[in-house]
Length: 157
Image (tube, rainbow, N blue to C red; front, side, top):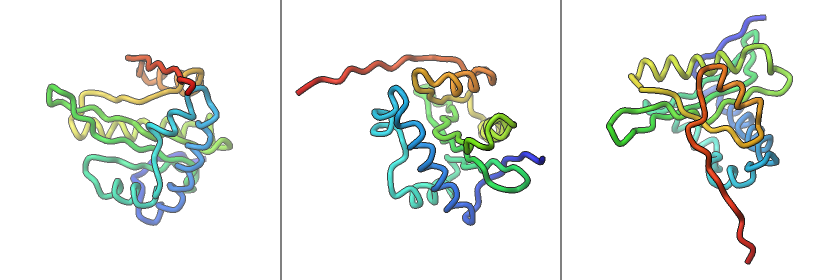
């Protein structure tokens, strides 16, 4: 079994869009997921947004593969800090359920880290929903630790 991560190409657009939709729907029912979907998730038209990111120097979109078959994707963008430095904000990291646990996510994260290092970024940043232990543990295994806790309460009309 050959694992890999490579920059997404125009020919990967349809599969990346389908993966992005799956990622959003998988996260939506999690605690905090419905509000995340309204604030932070990608918005339609996904194909137009992702097409723009494929050609942007401030974004990276990678696909994760097993034996050259795309089974996941990752995306990040440059986030400028007040100091003028930048971090790579990982917005997407998704692997289809049947391909998890074999290292595709790791390949994607390492690819994003390589991109960030080449750009001279000061770090990596991402988001894990509360109660999503798998995502939190995955990020922590790469040294990403919690830096903030966002809180919310709905208000009845």
